[in-house]
Length: 217
Ligand SMILES: [Zn+2]
Image 1: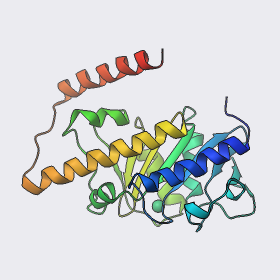
Image 2: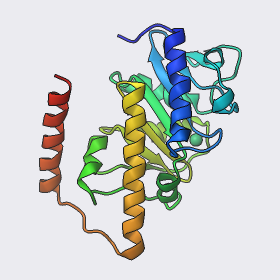
Image 3: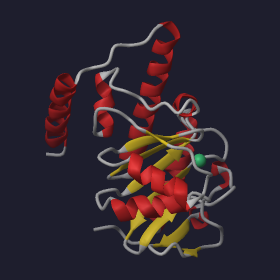
């Protein structure tokens, strides 16, 4: 069950947003962070530097998209709402304009199975959702679709989304995706990396599932 709105969760959202910039996977005021609560979700506000964001600036948005708080919610609240609606297991969402992931996304390129860690996002690739204007329902629809069977996707000419069962896991996944994007970008500078075939990726995904079961025990 999702937790209730609390000062601790608001503080954790602010810390996660600051951490994504400290880790170099986001810069400035772009990106946003949210966590599911029993009535909807809590999300970072629009247009406020993370260093100046306080727990009381975090905005509560209900399942119908009605916001409560002293600030306006991030302009991307729609895809947060729709991801939580489509994916009951998702408890937190991190959206960043990570430089390497965004570079690939600007070429409408997702990340293929060039490295076994691609399985960290739940499948054999990380898709790139088609472009749509930021803040629109169209972008949200594309994002939900690109995330099907996955825990991360790129957004064409925009950035990336990583989801998880906690703020920590969503942030950690965003770091993994950016690392994969950077490695893929580097490999492309000197050639075209060979991709795993379906059989090998099935094996990798099985091992990831076993590893996950072990680590949650
Ligand atoms: Zn964005």
